[in-house]
Image (cartoon, rainbow, N blue to C red; front, side, top):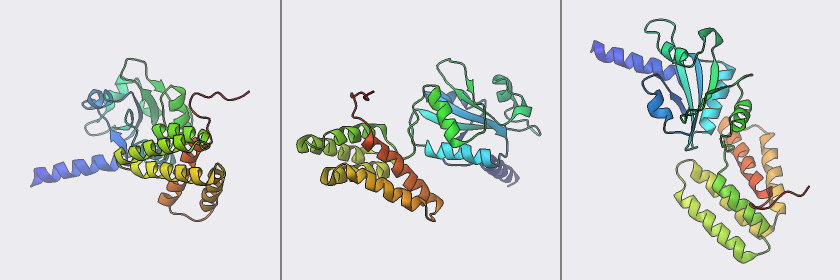
Length: 246
């Protein structure tokens, strides 16, 4: 009974310090096994029980990036008491405990890790990751449907081409996993509206969403509206293969 209680408390302590959808805990035993499966890992070294605005911002990025297959957001919780958990990870990456929290972008292909500087905010972290050449779609966007949406915008005058693009998008909805399915359905809905009402629908939909965001919304509903605004950007982008006119 005592041993089971000890195990329970250990698991509770672990889950408390590393919270948030998509935020993966790492230690020296799991580090190589987990990070080797991703092209890049953004990891935060922090105290074992992190809290505060910067931790909340990091959790936001973890949650909004949870469905990206080749990118991982992780956290290394460090103890300076008891079993000194993950002190070896600080030594591995040459990090002083006085500097915590520290965010680094790690690549399993041998490239040196890149340290993030500045205030930890979701938008700043996104820019940092992208500047390192890592594709990081905005919440609510799906690259494969971004391409179809942009092509459909340019093909509205050709009903046959637009219909073929819509059918391809509908196929992607059927195969989309988890939360991506709702995002994919929104793309298809907008594609249908654009085919029926023309390009002006996109501006009207953008105005509608922005008006909703000015009102009182739950955090979940606000994130949904912001994600839809992100997806709409694809419907005003030039089609793949076209160049912007100077």
